[in-house]
Length: 183
Image 1: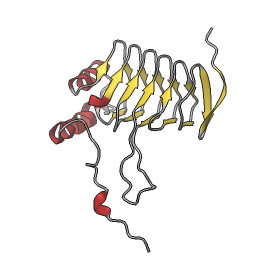
Image 2: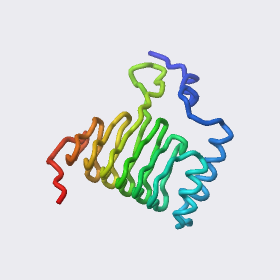
Image 3: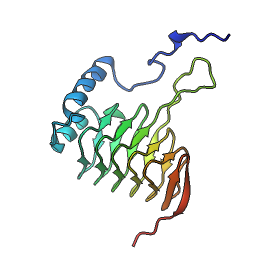
Image 4: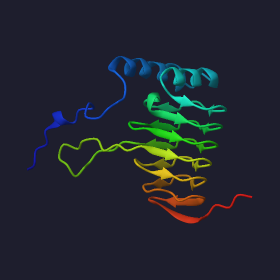
């Protein structure tokens, strides 16, 4: 029987980008004010994200119950929509362009574990959502993926590879099903 040394499953084997104090304070601020469903005031949420290092453009719509793991690793362009219960699990950098929609329950997942190594270290990679991208409800964007300009990931789909410009993707894993035509 192969034994795994569980002490190596330390959350400290990647750069979190901030000290322990900042992470702890953000955890509570996020839980009490940003993620909280009682707080419908987008201005408060945006201000708090910026105070913790997020770079945010104008016109952000941020709904209730969203989760941002590390705001200091988040860049958001102009006129972006973050739908209810979306989760930006940004163990690495997430860059969101202009006029992007991340729908309800979508997961932007920058981290994973390397299951080919017995210690299963983190295998994180940044995610980029270029201008005009639409991430459908309950869909997942995996580590290292670039969603090129005006691509769409349909509801419930999983993007494991880069998405071509102006193309609609569907399924798990998501595949291109047609070109996106904007009138």
